[in-house]
Amino acid sequence: MFNKAQFFKSWLRNKNTEPRSYSVRELFVTPRILAFIVIWLLTPRGFNHAMLTKEDLMIMYCLMGRIQVNWISIIKEHLMKIRKKVEYKIPYTVLISQFIEYFEIDIEKEVVETVKA
Image (cartoon, rainbow, N blue to C red; front, side, top):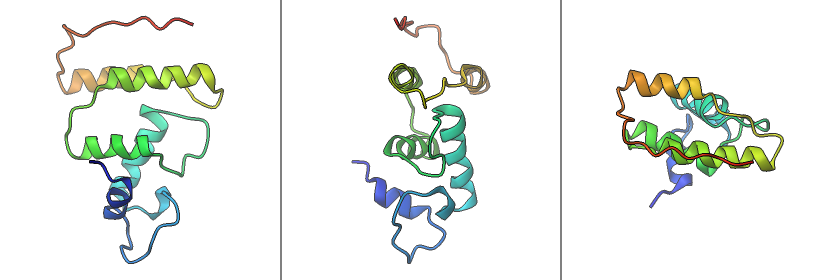
């Protein structure tokens, strides 16, 4: 089971302090950069880019652990949030397409879903 507090503590610069929040500035450089990629590019939002959500931490955990991620469902959830809240932004599908090409992911058998307004 994923423990967000334990995962976050494993990336802290100062492991002796108890974090009061899931702030990006308390992290080592590599996890901090990864956090900003997740927050600004993969699932962008228009609020509080310095704080990590549980979803952000889980995506970072999967990326660092080389765990396969269902990007279709993540983007679909994000698109649904865009419909409900103005502060969410549309993800950069071009960037995702670049990842798919770079890692040579086979998308021939992917299911295409139409999102209705």
